[in-house]
Length: 278
Picture 1 (tube, rainbow, N blue to C red):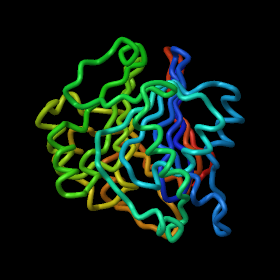
Picture 2: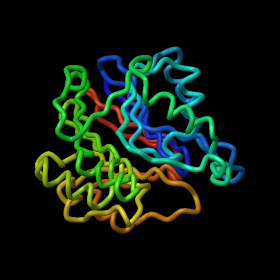
Picture 3: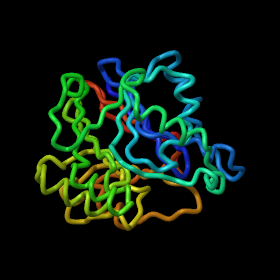
């Protein structure tokens, strides 16, 4: 069975995936808001300890180098073995003295800088749109839709690092899932031009950049035509509900209203269910 958990982490993103192969993947992590008094959020480390105790992480994917996608990385690495670390060859720099102003920890940025140059434990992989799929990607039904090397170049030139966000497609038993990262409109156009519209169709779509209108590329998303749209969002922040409600043929689930959202796919079972009723 394929199990995909979209965690209610607040402002950031964290998706945990258990593949039928047994491989465990974590796509982004954020625990920077778990102590907020006005919300009940999921600590990703606690979730892993409860649901998948003592299991190593075969694949950690940092979709792009924003702190709300890597907060908790230091703790994750100290508590789990990470075999592969997917990253882009971005050249982002930050002022670590100001991280605390956003509720972030210097240790997580420093851990990212440490891990992204390693050859093993974890092994760092720079994987792009035109890369040839390796056997273990195929085994897990994973396809990299983006970024392209041209979008990485644009990200480094403009210092808009959402341009080089990973966009990942997963397929199992005929069910297709697209994880949109924080990909920009330009990145989505690049993906459509390279892959074509048929490759974009999906049943479940994790909307990019927490549902922000700034990242909606309607001509591209029309080809996705999902049954379900997932929005990783936090209270006090508005996303484009009207648009995504029209896009989804079945349901829009936001983590701020529905909590953790789980998708299960096997030859006999295909269901999606939220932690709360919204």
